[in-house]
Amino acid sequence: MSRPEDTLPPDLYYDDSEARKYTTSSRIQNIQSSMTHRALDLLALPSPSLILDIGCGSGLSGEILSALPPSDGGPHQWVGLDISASMLGIALDRDVEGDLMLADIGQGVPFRPGSFDAAISISAIQWLCNADSSDVSAQGRLSRFFNGLYAALRRGGRAVCQFYPKNEIQRTMISSAAIKAGFGAGILEDDPGTKNSKLYLVLTVGGGDITGSGDITVVVKGMNGVDVVDGRRKREREKEKHGVRKGGKAWILKKKEQMERKGKVVKNSSKYTGRKRGPTF
Image (cartoon, rainbow, N blue to C red; front, side):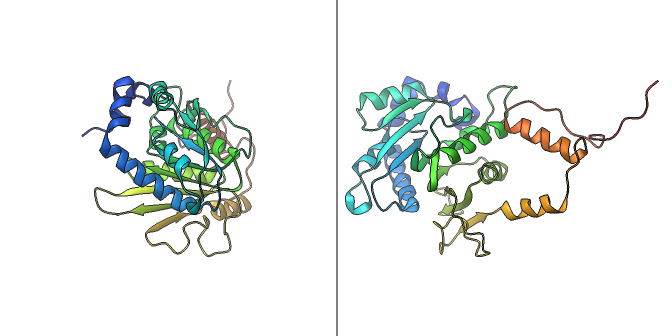
C-alpha cells in the first residue's frame, strides 16, 4: 500500500473529497484523539497555554485542546497551521475555536519569536521529507521548519510531534534537523515492533540537561523505550578540535550544507572538492 506522501503534495492530496473522508472517518477520529492525548501527556502542561497545532487539518486535535478540563491543565488556546485549504475550510465549517492559518511549514513558521508556550503536530512532519520540485530539498524544508518552530516557542517551551517516517533514514533526517535547530530532542516509540507503533519526537527549547544524564528533553526522563539523540556536545568538540580555514575543504562543505538547509540545489562533493588548482597557461 502506497503512502500518501509518495503520491501527491499535501495541498493536492487533501482536496475536498479526501478532507471530508479524513474528517468523517470514525477510525481516524479515534486514532487522532488517542495520539493527541498522548502528545498532551508528554507536553505535561500544568495550566491553560497557547499551543501551536502544526498540520492542524480540520481541527480534530484542536477540539481536544479546547475541551480539555481544568483538572488536566486545560482548556488551551490554539492556533492551527495547515497547507490544505480544503482541510481548513472544513475546520471553519465545523466552527472550531482556534485561529487558523493557511501556510506551508516547509517555508518556516511565520510567528514572532516566543509566541507560543508549546506545540503539537499529529501525522504531519513526515511530509517535509518529500521535495516537490528540483529546486528545493527535504533537508532545506526540515531546516526552515525546525528553525522557525524553535524561534516561535518561548524559552523552556516544549513541542511533541507524532510522525510516521518511511524508514530509518527519514527518522534520522528529522531528528538531526531538530537538533541542528537547537532543540533538545528525544524519540519515544509506543508499541514498538507492531503495526500500531507510534513515534513521538519530544522537543524542548533551552534548559535541556547536558550534565551527562542523557535526558536532554526533561520530559522523557525515566521512560522506557526512549531513544534520546544529543548531537550538541559532539559538534562542540569537533569545532574545538578542527579550525576551519576559509576556502578549504571543510569550509566549502560547510557552505554547501548551509545552502542545502536553505533549500538550494548544490553540486555533489567529490575527492577534488577544495583542492587547489594548478597553474594555467
